[in-house]
Length: 451
Image (cartoon, rainbow, N blue to C red):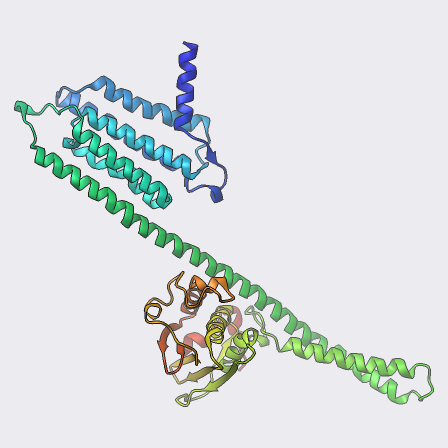
């Protein structure tokens, strides 16, 4: 008896494999698959009771309930021995789903095989795998499902139809073919959709990281500009006193050299504070947070100037009215910087940023004289992981198309619409905002906007 208990315990442990403890190492929570199995147990039990008891059909009840009981035992072992919140590894999740597929196949073999209308449930484990697990695991489970469907099509206990009814072989063959095609469709189509959703999720996460980084840099710039403004007055006083001392002290005074040095160093401090005051500021308030649209483009382009490529910001000849005054939005700074950087990478010798505005809109067009976008890339620009460069470029993130995707996403958050086109020579990216939306910053900025 002890030996039998040990064998049963080992069997249960094999069916509930070790789970991971961190989301990074797992693909699905154990609780999710356990819950799915409980639903299956309830459904299988209800079907057996209704068919065997209520309808009075003669079925092999004992082995059928034994299969259901095995699932109950596996679930109880998983519930009480391993914490339900753990994350299953790829292998563990595959074993869970593989067991469910084999258990269902055994039940179907006892109850009519593919003549059983519940044979469609063979698709369930493959669907779960296609949604959550890797391509390799999904293909293995799909192969197992096809083998299982083929087995119960050939070997099964017949259903006790009234009057000794037998379903045509052609009908069973049709069911088998439909099931196999459905398995293959799910393995390919659902898997592709799941991977696309995962790529988009990763790209959105990268967008948030880029925005957070730009906000931190912008906050540092704002702090520097504010410090420069506040220190300017006392530094000016120090400079005046130092100049007066240097003027009044005689040339042979032992303090003359020190006074001259103080004048020089105060002038140097003034230059440093002037440079700090010209840096991009935070979008959290203050007079340093607003600038012209041209100034915003120049600030975005500053980190990306490239030797041998001339960059110029020009005003569109179609611009009318006064130039917009806009907030130093981290989203716009990062997005325009990415577009300008991309143009700099492929330009032969020139990149232009054309800035325009009218009463209702404002726009920025970034143009380069490079090779332009290829036709297959042009129609898909803005999607994540679409490369606009070659594998030898210097920014790996750009190869996945994340740079353009992030830029487009950030600009959309500010109300901007982005379009891509080719020109002769080169390419151009056009960004257009509703003027009122562009000139309206966050609430904390609205009060600080200069009149």
